[in-house]
Length: 355
Image 1: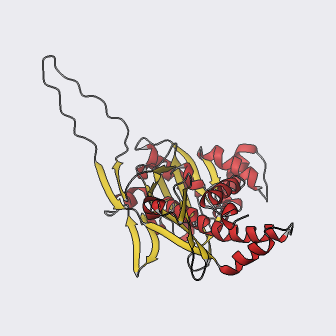
Image 2: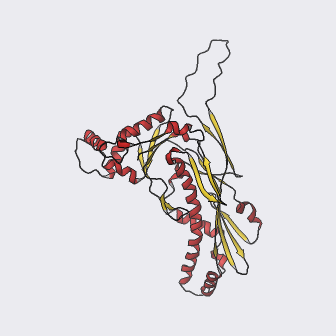
Image 3: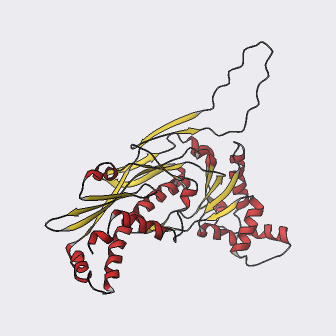
């Protein structure tokens, strides 16, 4: 058995697909499904969402009145490249060689160790895509931007609202006694209603309220929510279960509460939540954009190299395994991705910073 029999780009991609089926999916793809395109330039149109306008009357035999087009903005951006490598060194190769012809159960441990290394790279690519999607759904301080980090001493960031037109009409930041951590004075139902009405006014049917569990838990102790429960059920309770709160929230707001607590490790190794604390995003029904994946250098050029085994996963992440005959002899595994979300439905969300 050769090392390449068990460790190829195709086997890695297949293994990751199987493993991912047992994991909780990234929520962001619900609103930003994955799509592929050629090139590295992303161009998309941000349309103005609004309620319908009545057709004007006209006299017979008269020219039609020219209706001005609703404002649209075209955005064009170069998608960022994400790429990292890991190496299977001579020691691992020698261990596999030592036990390849035996029934030593240690063989499975060696293979698992190798796959775990490469799996980290693929996980990292998927994390970077989800991180970008969540930055759009919960823009820090209302700044509709994506920051993908530092590369070659350059911070790569993308501004989706350069004139602050979205922030001025689709973002609210609570302060003082109105913040949701003030159980006695906060009015979360009023805050949610304000966001729903803002979307309704432009023809959007508000459907979901996205937040994490820490933010949702503020409502368990909130006086307004407890009073709402008394009003609707006639029962006075000192303690409200989360399931009961979800039911109450949906009946009082008309929105489906979506709690997203998935975490990741950032570049500095700190653990963070994809969707941050103290934010609520009210979202309309339907997709908001796409997560676009371009063709990576590995996919475009290394396919012609006989020493490089390249496979592309369904989500656009390219896996390349390169044989280096040395010295030293080793196998280099690279995961690469060119990706950036488009946000055609930017006006179909309303964000509240609740604390």
